[in-house]
Image (cartoon, rainbow, N blue to C red; front, side, top):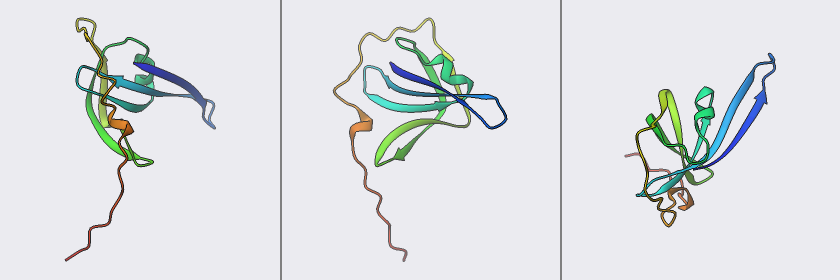
Length: 102
């Protein structure tokens, strides 16, 4: 996992954590943007489970995000043997098309 963590100061003085990461396992990799306290769990070589995640298209590319009830947990007993860097789902361009109504 490659990770970039930013701390953004809000107008009220509180800190918002934003992580931009490249997640991967044996099947593929994908970029993710995680906002909030869960961002601190995403660091290099961490193994995490993402529940209630969603795939959004941002600037014509897939990006994984958490939905409103999403959760990330550290998985200490799990080991990923290899990461498939050849299949990056975020490198595929998607074009938005309007479907004509009937």
